[in-house]
Image 1 (cartoon, one colour):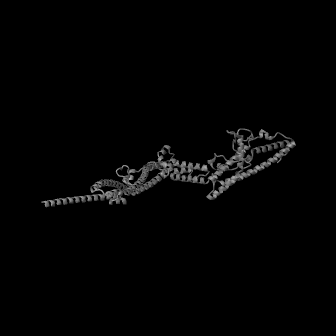
Image 2: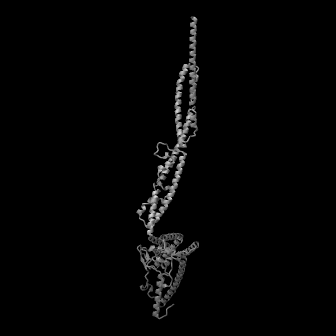
Image 3: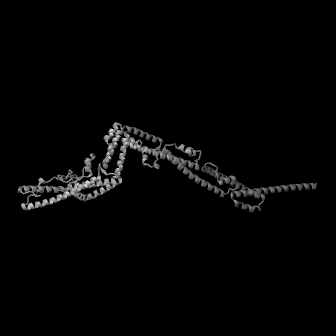
Length: 562
């Protein structure tokens, strides 16, 4: 019995020992497994330093204490791992979303996303920082792309407004996400969207350029028709938006609808209406443009083409032999030709005006020299004295002015291979006649001065023989009126311009205006600039001396001196 009991006790003891050993082994296994998991978690989270205290206490602490101490650490690491996994997942989702937007929702080829998808062992802060850096880079790229897309969309909106096109439909054709009304889908910022927007903008700009040129042509026709038809301002104001683009460059056209098809159609319809109205008033327009041509020719001293004169134009239109529009186009061409010729003649015409002004001053000075009271201290006398001094300086320059004008005219004729005509007369001939007449006048002046000296000498001799008598120069019966009157500002002006020399002894000095007065009926109202050949004061003295000599000879019965 004792042996049996002893065997049973030994059996129980062995069983208990085995159970204890098994329990110890399980504890060792559990501790080892948890330690391995802790090590793995620490390695994954990058917290290797936290495991060193556990290694130090491993040999000293019992298994249950080890298990009790490692379990909270393991739970904490598991919690950290789960939070870290959530952060990685969130960053991964954002990276995938932004990458998809940039790539057009194609399969992203991002190494970080691939690593996160295929490998879940590295959840360290270093790895998390790399993902966050990548995310920030993508977010910045997305922001830049959004700004660029917004600029493109705004430009498309502006162009669609100017052209009168549907903006929503235009951007939807590029990508549906570009519509502001579409809030469910984020804005596509892929390269394909950029290319589509650029192509759309280029297409709209090309359309804007075509429409703008078309509207400019129509606006130019409108202005031409308005000027021809004398359209009222209220009628012009209706198309002020269409005509405003004439003074704008292409980028400056921003007004909505100004290049719409409706605006172009309205302007085209107005052109057609005015064209039909123009056809009914063609005769009036032809006469009006002919009058404008004659006015331009009158101002530029160019003889107008006689083939389109008022009489001939009326006869041609009434007979129906010529289309009025062709006649109008012919007159328009003549106007353009006259304007171009006037531009090439401008330098010579300016010199002609300078010469005519000098001739005017010469006329004024000779009239002024006839005034016996010109040195009296009257109102405006000092002004006339200053003007007379300037006129004398100007008159000395007339020969040089004429010679220079002849040279310039000849050079112009050689260059243009045509004659320079002034109111139908060759300017060089007018200037040569003027030079000849001026030379004859100077010779006549010299002859009269010599004759006056002889007559003064004879008068002195007669006074010495027969005694002095009252001077005939002071006799009212022989004094000539000087034709000078005072104007409103106190200066003296000739009451009537003298055109011929005394007694017709000297030919008149001819200027282009005197030629035009004789040759062309358009210029009868213009004053012919001519200068009297000799001084009127000197002439009156000569006439007086001659008369007095004749009286003395008749009284004494002596023959007159020659």
